[in-house]
Length: 309
Image (cartoon, rainbow, N blue to C red; front, side, top):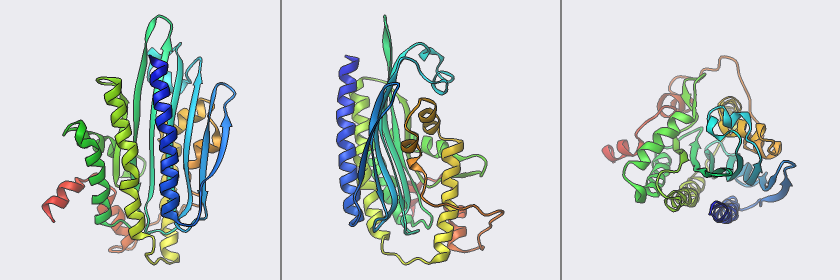
């Protein structure tokens, strides 16, 4: 039964990768995704798809991977010692989009499935994933749309699901050393195995299937907004925060590197350009200051929108 579950998830994820690439290439309107297949000596492989120098996307990627082995890396067993000595499969699709126009937000997402097996014992499995939005010049209309789609995806699974996974996203994508969120959040869930496999798998599909609905309308609204060198410099400065999170705090990056995953695919999430500036402080009252003052902290975006229609 475990392998039947794995096969069903793989079939969904490969199809999701196809649909994401098709929808994002259409939104870009100029560039297309280029695919590179790869294999992992210890077991598994994947297909990486990258879009570059497009009308919208300076760089983006949608990666599928399936890695497996006889033993888990230290990053996994340190937190879950009960997994020691188990063979494992980890399969997922991850994506990240870095638009050139500073008014179009960066976005990231992934959906994944993990299963670990040991002879004579029941398998240990769970789902994880989510998506988040990282604007540089945020617009409240876009943030509300983003969270509205996220809430609608969660709604069939219970009234408490969106608030819980929205908070988990705020907490996870938090740069402790900067005392700010990475962006305006979204959804994040992990270790999902409560109830049946079918129910958990249905939720993963709801999250993956809702991404284009959440993101593409924002791209279409902002892609033609005017920008200048100052806005570009600020975008690159804020991209530095994105790099800091991925290299310092992100568990997926650490797991991928420690498990012998393909480095190029793991670091696909990095922006093509970024910059750091010592002691940078935005001009008070400027759009750049508004980002940190109003948006880079947990907020009840939908509740506030309802209270201030």
